[in-house]
Length: 239
Image (cartoon, rainbow, N blue to C red; front, side):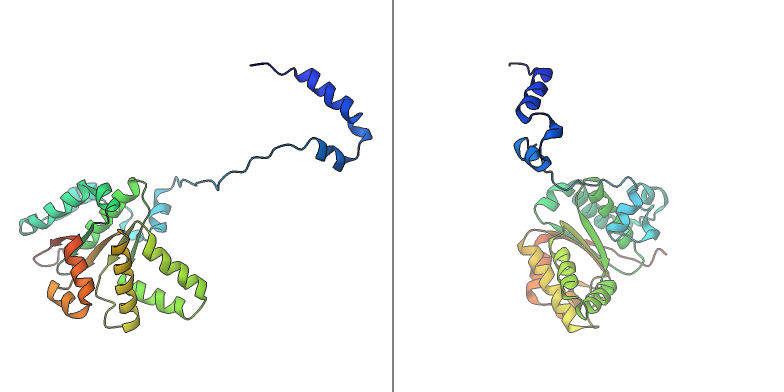
């Protein structure tokens, strides 16, 4: 490849333009217009993991909670061995489950560790570099009702995020049901949309399968049964 003689090139430009000082600035710029490349918006990688957890909706109380912490300090009754096996299998294949829209239901009495385990799974998703979001159903109720009374664009953006994020954790599923028929219908719509577009959901709920069948549409019940692994917790509260 022929090398460029910088000195000769500068001299050529000066002769062509009869020295910079004698030329109209706009004319000079037009004659020797430089190429300015354009770039996509930079991807900002947060070095503060707690900021990442906050952005994903993980409550501050759970910032230090993960599977390592649970193995050290958690309680794992033998009666829930089958539930833990289901969770391990789901987590061991987490990337594939997200890619194929497979979900997980953690069902059982309050205080049996469902939320702690669900958040630990969510942190595994963060470690994979996947986008995820957690919201409790009572907070979802408040947020959707509040946004629906204000800026329509903000409401639509929020709902779109619920529909499109690769993994959504809905904590305390069913707690929103009796509060608002409108929100319950929205939840139905979001779950069906995520199912159709193969986007995973993790649900924690204190309610039985029978209650879910009786209070949600048959379409929701069928989809939860068909595409979601289910870990059923037994026993009393660990708190």
